[in-house]
Image (cartoon, one colour):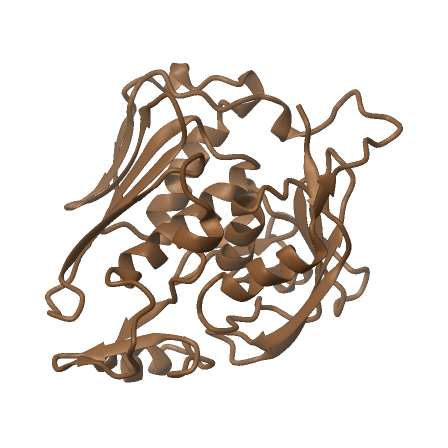
Length: 306
């Protein structure tokens, strides 16, 4: 199987959505077998944080990864948050291996979408990854993730599912009382549409009446009308939208980023409704249990209620 990495490195800086801290990210080519991984260059020993589902530590309004097992104070500092947009851009562009250096705790939000990351990737291009000298144990990318029976994870009326399908497809639905959003659905098939055009431009969004509450909880310190769509009962405060259904496309973007922690997308129809990072990661963990065998049929008809 041919694996790909970046043709050269690129660098971007910006403010983190939740921390409000400005960081610089430098994304570099990596050899085959390494996958996508972060390096906290600001911490002693420059700890490596793999972009793998087993490294997920928190899923509160974003996905956070952690090095180590979290049992020491040092482990608790070796984290990187809000990784989903950058990882979605890399995975959606076909970049299997990348070293992501970051000098702080949170990936910049930029304009709230994955578009700036996509443009950076397009500027440097994509090339075939070099194989390391000792490649007998290449990576978790070596085996396909095949779904033979449906897998469902439910939480009240929200759910995520992976269904058998001849090609990879993502479908997402959301339902908000706010009339500016309402009920929206969107499907994306990587083989039929470019991620850069159909999904990457969709920006994160929020409700005006929740802003103060979230900030009181120490969240969205870096959020603004420059990097997020915000609406109230009267409509959007910062139009125009890039798509009529931009909110649900952004939720699909988050799903793509979270499932990229598997190393590759499953050969399945992934379906989500009113889901969250938590549900996305629960599905990814179920799938990850079988990656070594390259077959998730042993999880046949699995249903989890949370």
